[in-house]
Length: 156
Image (cartoon, rainbow, N blue to C red; front, top):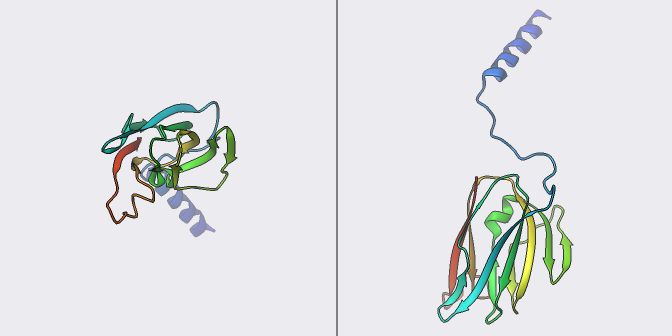
């Protein structure tokens, strides 16, 4: 019994003086109205153009990314790095909501002009690249190389 008491006491002391754990997101990951973030994709003679190429986000905050394409050409938005590191909530396309509890997606293709939205909560810090480019997938490299632009989501 004395040995067990000493082991437990030593373990408690070690845990008390251990390095602090990295903060984790907890609680309701979709609380309150989301903070709106906007990205507009325009078509130029050289390919897609972004209204903003850099976004600063905070882990644990609830966001809604509103993406609008002018529809002059089909474009594909790939956001898989951010999405792998976020809790996804809702995708809205033409007013139709798709609830994504424990589901994921990688990209959104704009074959025509319009706006789509998706709600998410970043759960890991880091810098996550996104791309907008020709259809099919820019990341899988088209034979012609494709036209693409890149941006970043920085989560702190």
